[in-house]
Image (cartoon, rainbow, N blue to C red):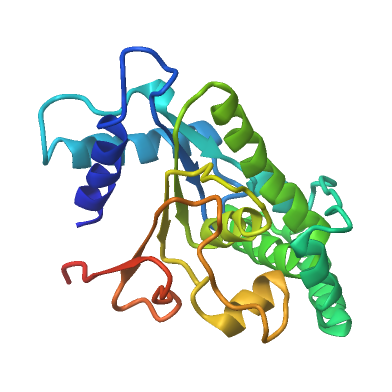
Length: 258
């Protein structure tokens, strides 16, 4: 089912495609959590194979070329060994949300994330190390607005690159990547869409409490479709309790086979 859905994303992109890259859609893949020990090239290949496999269920013609897929990689930013960070501009809505955060709670998470990061360097077992770094990365994203800023800047860079090339943008964001995409896109004040389609998968964004925990904000911060997004499709497994329904776009519920 997921392959068919990804194929539909690819098909929607191919309908706009021409012989030249200008005007040819680009698919930006924003990965989820726990990727600090993964290889970005291998992750890109896995996603592209999934797109190609899904596309073959609809047509034998290739719909997405190598140059049509880019991975927005931010796992290295959240790695406890990384010093990457940045600051939101004073007038940025994300800066306002950050100012409204529970400082004591975020500080506690920051300390715990630091401890997990140190412990991960002392453990020899690779799977355990990866899990500890994943948890440390989660804590870093929640606790440190400067880490969120640097993570979201990766997406901003790829969107700007695609627009400079004259390419329509399709974003496919999974899990925490959906939070990264929403937080960045909701901060823009575009009068016209810069993203033709936002596809979120396994996203927590639709749950107000989880959204405020992850990116800050108060009860007055309601979920809206970012002005720069033309269409938003939310895909979720009906059995995934963390995958939230979406009230501002198209919500698609899937049930994988047992």
